[in-house]
Structures are given as structure tokens and as C-alpha cells.
Length: 96
Image 1 (tube, helix red, strand yellow):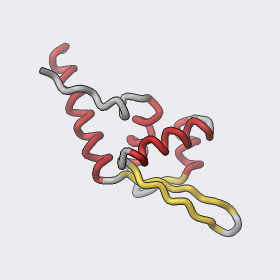
Image 2 (tube, helix red, strand yellow):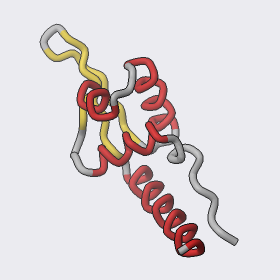
Image 3 (cartoon, one colour):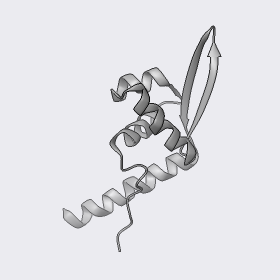
């Protein structure tokens, strides 16, 4: 029986966020918004979902007089992505 794909990561935007965070120590909201071309509202919702699952840590702070939201991938998020990729490989192995 093949593993089920993680429904949380099987969203294009959430997978893009996790993939971007994999290659950096942390990223701020504006960076993620620019790279994913998501709207602010949609990006916020998806960050909340990933944060609630424990896949990312979200830090909100005031820098100067402006709010800054930054995100980083957690170990749980890294493990979830590894499992997701392994599942995809399993699926593709059956097809190829």
C-alpha cells in the first residue's frame, strides 16, 4: 500500500512556502509574498495553517515602527517535507 500524500503539503502555495524555507534560515513575509506571487491574505492564511501544524515558526516583531513577520522551517516541517518527497518518489516509481 502506498503512503498517503500529506494534504497540508499537497497545496501548491504551502509546498512553495516550505520549499523556499528549506533553502534559507528564515524568510520574511514580503520575501515569501514576492517569491510565491501570493496575495497578502492568502499567504497569511497558509502561514497560519503551516504554523498550526508545527511545520513552521512565525515570529512577529516591530522593527523601527513597522511590523515584521518572519518564518522559519521547523524540524517537524523538514521531516514532513522529506516524507512527502519520499511518497512522491514511491508514486512515481510505480508509474515510471
